Length: 193
Image 1 (spheres, rainbow, N blue to C red):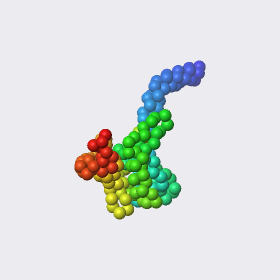
Image 2: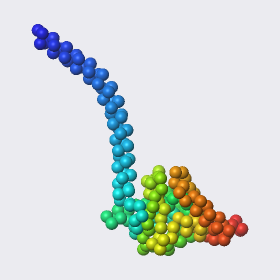
Image 3: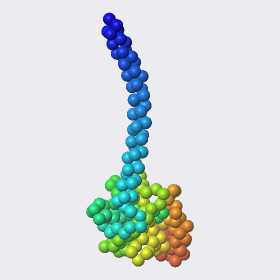
């Protein structure tokens, strides 16, 4: 009798522990889920950094716009790069959005002529990717030209900085003022428009 009573008592205690433990397990699950998401995010950042190393030259595989292009790693992986701190006019319509803008085609042609069959060195700022998954970078040509700045000072892009990536905001602002003063690129038609 005593052993059966203890068994029922043990089952009751076990059931109570399960009900009470279920809340703890649920809370732990929520905590683990958040922890898992943080670990996955950290892993992705580490993988991104491991695959695209700062101050390394990568061949350009495709130019999509005046401020966006693809690079390829030694493993033939392609990464979409968005130049930080600048905005070039859109050169094509995306899906149902009609965003083709003035001087977009010229900006894409200019960048294509600069980057076709070339390599670029990438450097990063605080934020490594944008909400579309593109890698945010500053790019340098093999001859040392700072591509982001070069596009602005030749009138093929304008300043567009978004915190926390503001390392070169003063450089880009000076370059845009110079382009406006010289009336180059998209600024050459400003008197007509």
